Length: 301
Image (cartoon, rainbow, N blue to C red; front, side, top):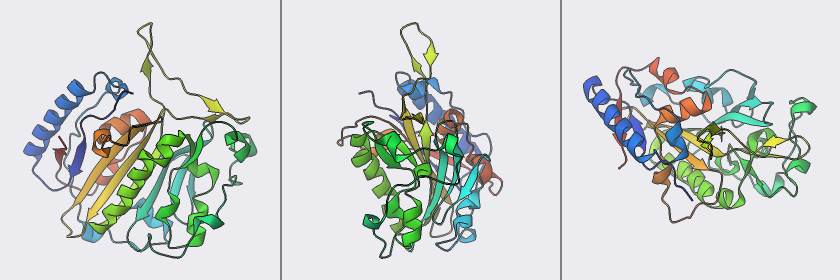
């Protein structure tokens, strides 16, 4: 298997512009050199040209308010839906979400909610022509992979149940879903011990692959009568608010939708945020930049 994201970037808000540009350019050079053989090497990556800063003390929100999840704006504006525990943008062509954003903190992870009382269900707010069903997944060989994870919302049984809408699900390789992806979800929850709030944006990617004729093609499987799209990859973007009020960190991951050896550390799948923005058609950084003044990129080599 070809590993992706051999270098990673964590964006830490709060340093000078000169150092920021230098570090970003250095990060870009390493990314280009080391990812050339990977699928993500086909996605152009550019440094963020402007500085960022934001104080975590401005960002405190309470659990249970899905509107507060959108403090950093919408990555895109199509088909927005608000649930008890997350906000999502639905793509009727693929029968999956384009992105889902949720807010994690110790309060949201605590409670008596139990997933044994939850069942996967159709999203009645989606037109029947554009809706995934449980029958689409039956016998497909793919898991119904959560985008907003059920275990992230123990604070409310209703919030946990909302994560079982099929509009919050995408076809996911069972090995990935039950192992490496699960480990990434656990990492997101563990970060709430060290940060004021952890905002998690998750979504599918459909990345190009170079084929024998030397050309790039985007090819993906569909399953079921409703032709639910099977992503080639998944992304997670983490917005980490520092508890001391000094700033915000960004971490962004891309994982292929295939089995991954659990011995491979999650850090291997860190990628520059610009890579995900270009590959997904979404924008994260500009929403934060509206409130910021300096940016430093730190490589995880």
